[in-house]
Amino acid sequence: MERTTTLLAVCDVLTLKALEALGKYIVRGGRDRIIVLQRGRLPLILAHTIWAPTDGMVDKALRGAWDVVPPIVTLHGCCDVTAEGVVCTLDEYVHDLAVSATPHALEQLAYRFETRLGLPTREAVWT
Image (cartoon, rainbow, N blue to C red):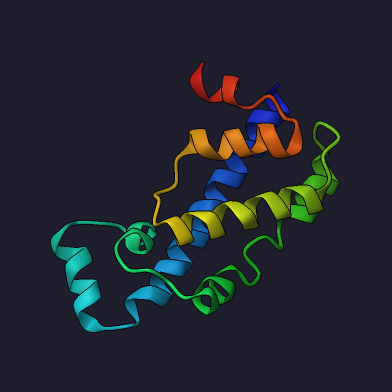
């Protein structure tokens, strides 16, 4: 369970960084967007919940976002999951967040890891 929890924590950070990169692409759409975020004291990771990103923006933001996953999974290994499986799960999750204008929630990422990769992560989140 400890390695699963660690993998989930690393992927949580990677998800936040990917959403931050997406937020940077989104606010480039107009100076007023950064002002809206600043006035509301909202982080860039929530920009996709206010302004719908294009598929191109999401693709650009995610380019290279998961490059660190294969070396981590290869070096540390975990729970018989493949790096490709983790990358695919993360990519689908962030795309789904962007399309649905939903903020990231660790519980939702854990659910994806459980249902897509077979990892018992939700218990780690709530204990």
